[in-house]
Amino acid sequence: MSVPTLHESQAPVVELPGRKLSWLVGNEELRARNCSVCTIVIPPGEKARPAHSHPQGEEVVYILSGTGRALVAGEVAPVTAGSIVVFPKAAVHMLHNTGRDELKAICFFAPATTLENYKMFEDVDFPDVSGK
Image (cartoon, rainbow, N blue to C red; front, side, top):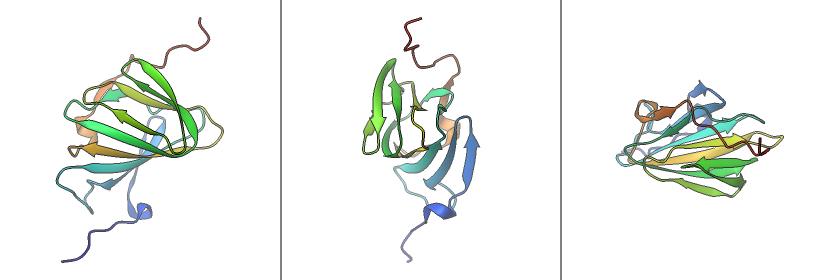
C-alpha cells in the first residue's frame, strides 16, 4: 500500500466565475470516504460567484492569504489570512476579495462533495455597503 499524497501543483485547475479552484481531495488522483478538499484563488476585487450552498453538507474555509469578506446566510464578516469560516449545511454563502492581493483559501467539505452538488443562487450578492 502506498501513502496517498498529492502536491497542490499536481491538481488540475478549474476556472470558475471569480476564482480558480483545484480539487486536492476528491479528485481522480486522491479520494477520501467522508470529506473533500479544494483550494480557491480569488483575484483582487472579485467574488467567488455565484452565491451557493451545499444542501448535503457543510464547508469549512481557512483563509491562507489575502483579505476579504464572507457572506453567510445574509450576514457579512471580514476575513484575513488565518481566519476560518464555517458555512453550515444549506447556508447560502460567497467570498469577496476586497484586498490588493489574491485571496487564497483551502476549503474542507463533509461529507465529500463535487461541483455537481452545489446549489446556485445567481440573485444573491453582498449587501450594498454604501447605504444606497
